[in-house]
Image (cartoon, rainbow, N blue to C red):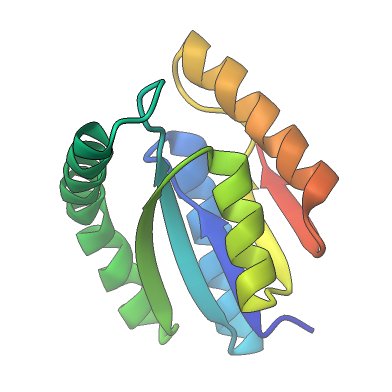
Length: 138
């Protein structure tokens, strides 16, 4: 049923819950997982700032990815970890289309009021535009 999952990960407790659920699904179905973290670029985007945002985000998420990689390895799940820059919903849907994913697993909302507002709209957009099943974890 599931052979490839995309997991949206932003470091929030909701995204950690989503990761654990995706790990469980991937383990049961012997599915591959792609964990995607998206850094939002400054407005208007400038090439120099774009590169700095990507470098900073990669450094930040690599710290989180270490623990997540260990969990995946101990569960016997093939997991790939990516950091991209752009609008989170667009990047999540684009990766799911590009990889022909069977499902996207993501948290419902982030931690702060701003994150809750932004990520709430991200989940709604992903649900609206994704070609595949979207599992939203609360």
